[in-house]
Length: 297
Image (tube, rainbow, N blue to C red):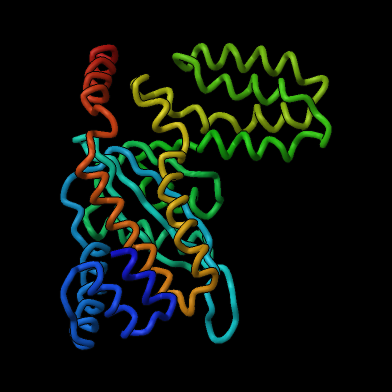
């Protein structure tokens, strides 16, 4: 599906698409058949994008990437907004892929409202970077969910608060916080880190102390889920595949052509995820929640 979408995006002629399709399938197709295949492709992608979300998703991971699109003769960067959910069977699903002019609060709000209109429910944790518009939209549309700021993005942002010439030990020790067993251990290490580096890098340590809280939200989850939910890295493989395929196109003739290709990739990836083994064991979360209720009683 993604290969066919890519051919159409790149402007491959119907004749060439026909020849390639015949070689792949082993029998002849008429030009009208190829047009019908294209129509079915778009219908299939539309059905995927608008499908009802019937089961609850405990975890929601949000990310965006930018692609170059030509609109009204002008080449501009447009955002591709992506949502991945993890259901109570422990499987990942790509819930939505949409285009937006930019990552504004209104764009992300419309994106999330669209998900809720399709039935998104039961979200307990949202993982994303700290884009202001995205964070505001999460708080507005999914206020019941806790927010985990991606710690990888946080560590990248930390570089902005360090001088050009700095040792690696400071950031390495900060990164180690996220490998601790629980929040108490992480906070103890944070206190030691602040004490050790505040004199040498006061700008970094002040910023870190003020902003690190939301990168530690994942500690409220069962330990087995920490590595999967403390960052948006689980979307990285999908983004790498999108990057590999869109790099060939470079500039899309319009936003709809970009959306067609990325959604086709999303459909293929989603099918692979659903056929694969469970991504995480959600029994761990069930037991974790039961234990928390017993302790609170």
